[in-house]
Image 1 (tube, each protein chain N blue to C red):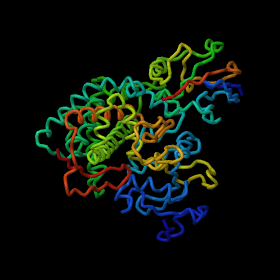
Image 2: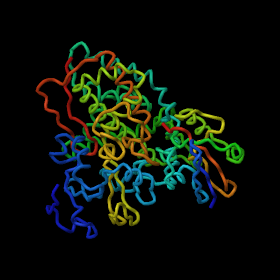
Image 3: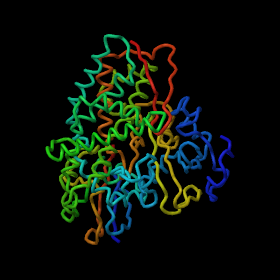
Image 4: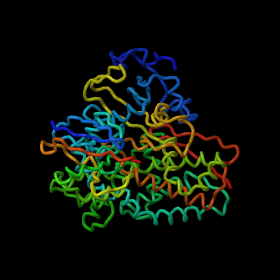
Length: 107
Length: 406
């Protein structure tokens, strides 16, 4: 298990335990965290699982593949260098303590 | 609706509480067919959120009308599998799966990822100028007459031509494909449907051979050229994928356009509203998709599960009545109102989860361009006086004909 923290725009934090191998989008949905939608279920077809990875963690993630980079152009909220699609972030022990910031909107 | 005793008790599993059994004639009954979207919206007033629908014509299943439940089922394939959940007759000696619909995760990504780029929001934009030209050509063919039968003059050829272009198939085949679609999906007898099936199979076999020898950039070639795990798809997989794209993409867009244009014809003030706010086109399309979604999501339970106190068992069928879910008053205030300024929430027109419609962005674009091109040239139109609108029975909900006048 790894701990993942979701930070709302308001600053409110939600800390959840995520099983290794699970992606951050599904973890958010399973935990009922509002602000992640994941309409297409992790298929890189909707850009509604957008998050801003905390700057302390960006280097520790695997790089985004071209399909994700393409879809990041479709986010409703401003795209930043720290933008990732959370369905592509697969949790493992090295990500224990991961912090992601939720965008203002997914649409 | 009253409980039913028209079926022998053996047809309804023992664990289904009698008070949850309902016969609503989903997609088949006269009340449903008189005004299907109104009917499905009203279910929230008269029915429990989850109940057991009995239907001698299409079979029995648990159904949900709740937006939240539909998303739950769609997001948990480990409970709700698509395997065996699509009723479509296939030759058991030459079986094929509807790919990727009938493949559960994780294998389904292997197929779906082949077409991700083509169907992405950016990918479908490549077709935009083709679509506008096509819409204009279709409109050219009838605008001078001041009349059209919308379903045959626009609703059918528009998505079929786009489909052909996308697949890498010749436009000369349009009428043939239209005929196959009609015979396969709307004929009254199995022989007509069977003949259409054989026609499509023979044609696609020939096309697959041609495109294996001479690949192009169309979707069929992409499927043939794909090497997931380093190996090509089998012939049955290529066929199942291509055939599924054919069925999935034609009747659905056809029905959606027909539903929308019927509403447009009956609502002149709303047409003006759409025309007056061109920058809102995406929100307009999304809201129209919410109120006029056309299909359902069928699953089979792989494990026992309890939802809202209802105990369902492995093997039970479960259908999310997506149009009804889109009218869930807990999610959409005043759900039957077409309100273009609603805050956007996920709609179920394209289902959701891993099997969410791969054509969603394509469909949105088709509807957007259809609206823009049509309303620019024919902003004012009515349904022909005296028309009685009838709906197709079956799994895709829309009117049979739509005679328009201007």
